[in-house]
Image (cartoon, rainbow, N blue to C red; front, side, top):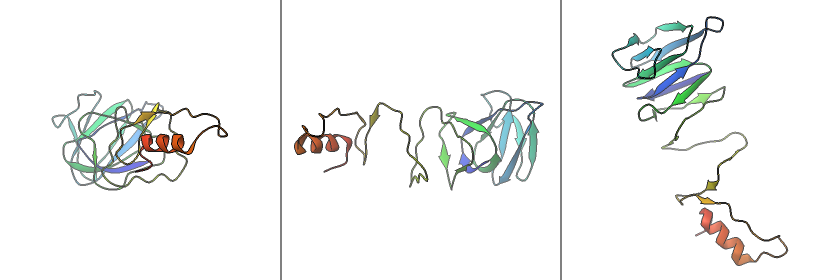
Length: 153
């Protein structure tokens, strides 16, 4: 299950007649939906407290802040993605382009980074530093690698 307070976000929910999905507009704001990515405020409205059962892939968007409850979804960058509260995902959540968190991000599990670069504390991401075997590496080389990642001053 995914429950979030969101503004100006497009969410795609995959469904079928065999595996229908129910969507609830939990509180505040209007949510609009249709079976195409260009969904906007002129499409079918899901009012506060209302639910809809979908039987085919459907896009949802809110032009204001709204809270919805969804299950098994993918989030695509449609417009700016903004969260005004906690986001909890019980299943995988896929963000297609870039996820920006304007507050604390807490990971309660392993960090699995598959990217080619990394940067910490506002440092631009850099590629992995290949150091010599531990017996041959100097303290200066270690310090330079840590500094490149943003882990020292």
